Amino acid sequence: MNDDKKDNKNKGGASGMAIGMCVGLAVGTAIGAAAGSIGTWMPVGLSVGLCLGLVLGHNSKDDNEDDTDDKQ
Image (cartoon, rainbow, N blue to C red):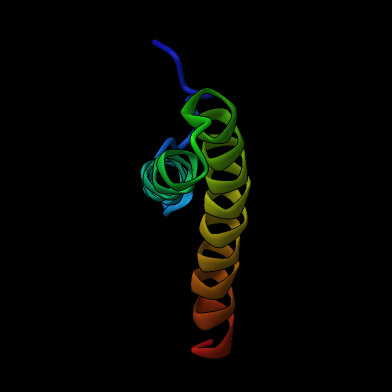
């Protein structure tokens, strides 16, 4: 019925983002606990982790595409 479906396979973007968010939240919480201001450092860690996760997920997607081009 819908012939124009896009291929929505997960190629690392979402998992990289989730891992980055978890690690960033953990690091932000640890820094906040040490500094005495968890309310400030939790969102900072979450934001930094989210950005790093997106970058890492995007890089792994590009690496997978480059590998398939070399095999042709």
